[in-house]
Length: 215
Ligand code: MG
Image (tube, rainbow, N blue to C red; front, side, top):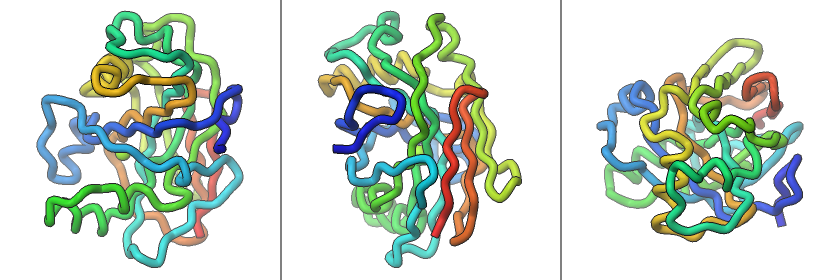
């Protein structure tokens, strides 16, 4: 069982939202979708602060996608966006690590993204903190990623196409959400390749931090 650091929970499902920031959809040449793009990662992809992202031999281009990660703390189905805040156990920062070359091939052949998004260590997560008491604060979370001391990605949840409460509403219409489920909420612009030796520092506000190396 993979733990969620900072919370008394084990990781259950890992839901991910794609193309949730217009500028990022544009940089990869994708149309902005009307509904959230949903995919899942295996729990075996989870790794932690102080560990390593392992570059798989199957890929020649592995990108970072910096994302706010929501941990669910209460079971729910058909959760209205207005009540979503009460289902959040914690917030963290994570990287949706992506083998871009394999993903591009999958897009061309209309196959799934599971392999390109699901390798071991492709879901590093920070320690989680309790969500802010004011639900409106979810709409204005700032986060950034430095690689080797250089700013690579910087975002605010204010720029999301589908807000965190709306994502919870949407996912819970299809899936029963349960304590320990994680939601990777999409990446802002600035995705770029990682190489062996890179040192990544991802931060959510000044609340929590993920330090991870690449090899
Ligand atoms: Mg992503």
